[in-house]
Amino acid sequence: MAYKITKVKNIFVNLGKDSYHIIIDKGILNQVGTLISKVISPSKAVVITDKTVAQLYGNTVLNSLSECDFEVKLVSIEPGEDQKTITKAEELYEALFDHKMDRKSPIIALGGGVIGDLAGFVASTFMRGIPLVQIPTTLLAQVDSSIGGKVAVNHTRGKNMIGCFYQPKAVFIDTATLQTLQRAELIAGMVEVIKYGMIKDAVFFEYIEKHLSEILELDDVALENIIYNSCKIKAHVVELDEKEVGLRAILNYGHTIGHALEALTLYKKYRHGDAVAMGMIYASKIAMELKLAEEIVLKRQESLFRKLGLNLKDNELNPNDIVRVLYQDKKTVRGKLRLVLPTRIGEVIIADKTSDKVIQDVLSS
Ligand code: NAD
Ligand code: GLY
Image (cartoon, rainbow, N blue to C red; front, side, top):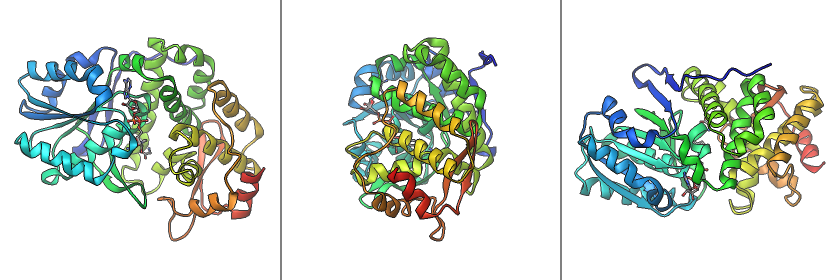
C-alpha cells in the first residue's frame, strides 16, 4: 500500500492544560525566536546545549531569540551521557540564578536526548518548574526523547532513575540539523523509528522498508515523513497514558532487554540503539516461542537491522545475568517482569507471565 506523504508538519499533543505543538520543518532554527514568542512572552531565557551543538547551531538560536527581545544566555556543557547527573543539574541551577531567571523565564533545550533530559529535569525543578522548550537535534531526540515529558538524570544505581514527567511548552524540529549528525547516531535514531512501526503502524513499517536508502541519504521528504509519523504515534500514546500507568509501556518495546544489555556492559559496549535493536529481536523470538507471533515478524525486523549494520544478538553475556538485571527494570511491578512482545507487525502486547526459562532459552539460542 502506498504511504500517504503528509504536508501537515504540526502535531498537537492534547494533554489538557499541558498541551503543546510539535512543529517539524527544515530550516526552522532561524525562526525559533518568533515561534517561541507565540507561547512564551519575551523575557530572560537560557539555552542549554552541549559544546558540539553550540558550535554548530548555538548562534542561530541565540540570534533568533535576541531578535525577538529575549534576553538570552547560552550555557554549553561537555557532550555525553556522563553529563546527565544531579551534580551537573546543580551547576545549571547556578547559571539560572546568575542570569536572574524567574518563574516565567524559559529554558531552551538545544541538542540530543542527553541535553533534553537534563535541561528538562532542571526546568522541572528550578523554582518548582519553569517553562521548557525542546529543540532536538538528533534523530533519537526528534522522534522520542523531546516528546512526552519524561525528564531525568542518571544515578549510580541506574539510568534515568531520578526524574519526573514534565511536558515542554513546544517542540521545534529542524530536520536540517540531521545533516551534521554522525551516521551511527542516525542509525540509533532509526531503531526507534522502526520501533514505532512495530508497535502501532504496519503501513509505516512498510514505508521504512521501501524507503530505507532515501532515509539514510537524508532525503528531505523521507526524513520529514519518518519524523512526522513517529512523533504522531508517540504523541497519540502519550495522550492516552501520559504517566505510563499502562499503555505507554509499549514505547519500551525492545528496551527492557536492551537496557539490561547496556547496564551489564556498563553503557560502554553498545549504543542505546544497538542494544534496543537486539532487544526487539529477542522480544520477537520470545513471542515466537510463545506462539504469539509468526517468523515473518522476526525476519522483517532482522532484515532492516542488517541493512543498518546492526548486531542481532549478543554473544558474550551470560543469560542468567541478563534475566537478573531484567527484574530491575522500571516496568517491573511487585516483582513481575513485564515484557512488550509483538503479535504482528504494527501490534504489540504487554506480557507479564513470560517464564524465565523461555527468556533464558531465547537468550541462549
Ligand atoms: P546525545 O544527546 O548524547 O547526542 C549524541 C551526540 O550527538 C552527542 O555527542 C551530541 O553532541 C551530538 N549531536 C547532537 N546533535 C547533533 C547534530 N545535529 N549534529 C552533530 N552532532 C550532534 O544522544 P541522544 O541519542 O540524542 O540521546 C540519548 C539520551 O536520550 C539518553 O540519555 C537517553 O536516556 C535519553 N532518552 C530519553 C527519552 C525520553 O523519553 N526522555 C527517550 C529516549 C532516550
Ligand atoms: N521513551 C519511552 C517513553 O517516552 O515513554
